[in-house]
Length: 523
Image 1 (cartoon, rainbow, N blue to C red):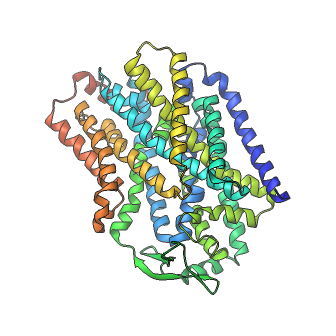
Image 2 (cartoon, rainbow, N blue to C red):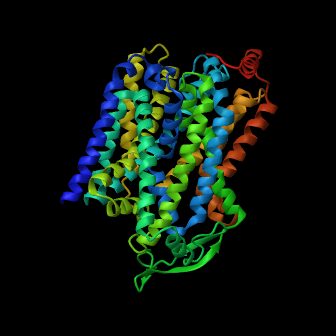
């Protein structure tokens, strides 16, 4: 290693040491009981709630996936996705957070999402709980693999080491940290990591813009590429038929004529916002805040962070095309543009801390995914179905074993070095959004929703994600729309139709609904 690489490594190791220290400090409280381990004892303040929710949600794709999309094809795809996410974030905090926090307490003090659904409908045979836990296991395993791909790309690019080796090392670190401190450590470190992420984004975009000759030069370069700086058009890199890499002539990348970016594609990208209603890592923060009244402040903090981060991430891809037009010649490699900008524009030691921003994003997401998936199995399937008298120690032991198994499966999925982070995340995002999003909304706001409707909505939404992605989307045209939108609509229809065709909820369930609806707070 040269001196610059060593300085970057020192900075990143320092950062990782701080993260581990947070885990150690939280260990005692986390291991007190399962509620503390899985939900932090409902003790999160408004700042930690907001920042940890967004950091765990955005993950490494904010610093690598989103800039990579903007670098590769321009403004349209990345910007409409960012707009959809910003709107979805706001609506989720505005209409879901308070009602869910209140209802989770009313529903027998539920501490996981499957437990909330099961208690909400007062089921005895735990079908909803089991199904919800299984879907969480499936989609979070896919989600966690995207984080490991990020780790592998980051370390292999920085240190010139084999991708698979670096990916596995990253997985071991994340796993060890999650085993150590649970939800409280995860949320505390996520707060710090959210700060690191937004600073890293802001520093890179400012310095890179100056290096590129200013904002005018960046815009001028983007406008010279057909469709690159348009909201209703998209750039088309011209690819070599053999290597599938972008063709370069006279030192410049070659683009074909711009393609149209119609309303169907816009709706497809805006549909990303629907995913928020079903994201367990965000919904758990709503349940974990110490006071319902603090959610309003959390919403404001979260929105400022989200808008700034998304806007800057998109612009980083645009700036990257100006500074390094021929460095990244494939959609997969384009996701390294943030790393390229950081390592070439900053002093080594500062670049190391900026690289820690990517590591921060990855850790903050992967530990959330692993922990929630493990809790879904240990708390909701092992204790909820197979061994109802299991104590906290048994539940936490099973949780840790489950963590190991999920991490192993995620590593296997992440072995493909050519994986595109954005594409992996989009599938898992659709899975959660369609499986749980409609059910959350109907459970909180429609009293007629019953247990049969809930089961139909979950199964229908999850199944449609796979069917649309693997079969229907292949037909092209209007059918190529992002699978989240049709699956979300189908899940909603299933809930309404099946609920109306079957018996209404019991008197006790309806009383719970009215109590949550009318009470201002249950603290």
